[in-house]
Length: 307
Image 1 (tube, rainbow, N blue to C red):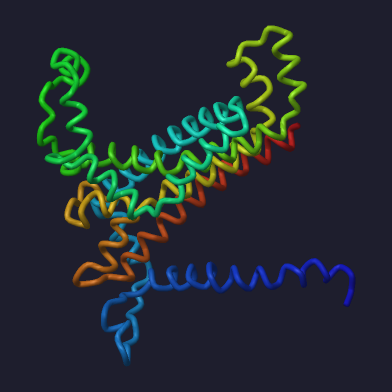
Image 2 (image 1 turned 45 degrees about the vertical axis):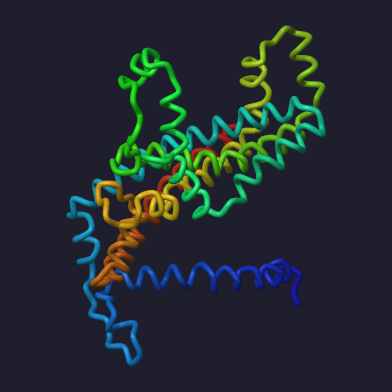
């Protein structure tokens, strides 16, 4: 075997796994998005799917739900990505300052939140924000009436329906997703901090650098590749959040709370199922995520080339 073929031969098993688990399902989804697919096409002895061309995409882009879902998806992702990165970075910096035993204790504690399945996470937060028996309303009612009125504009929180309104349900969703996502960011940042020579921080301390200046001049530049990867991963994860929203919203009844993932699921599996239409929405979501990540990755590459 020629020597130049050896690396490609070693990559072949991994490429086959990727093709079977990722590329083929993606092809099936794209193909389905150009057809009318329902129960008749998936039952035994299926009927051929009717080719619709771009009709599913046209219908999706002309729907009022598309713009509602897109607004909810983008707004949620921007806020959640920012909060997740900031919170995870701060916790990572804190763990770097702690002793070995305490740092290990904190890592185990926060990783328990990260390892909790999304369904369980959503159920926990749904119970905490329950209007009648929720811990959140109970804690807010413990605040002095004057303080609560000054800060929140109300004193009595009994029966507050957090999960009935599209704006407050996304507030709960942001809290739930950030709580489950920041541990991965924190541990990744901690691992990056361990690779930075301590002599740099000692020199900064001798020069009288403040913690903020040290982060700006030393930590952030050296960890920029780590932050770049974490940002891309966070964008992908938060753009396609589904499970938590489905559980918190109680299914697919609140259409004003739809994001693109929940809308695609609703169209594909609610009676009568329109799987081709749902696939078209999923393809649109995939394209949006790919465009955002591609633009950001290209910017990273340009920055590195300049250096």
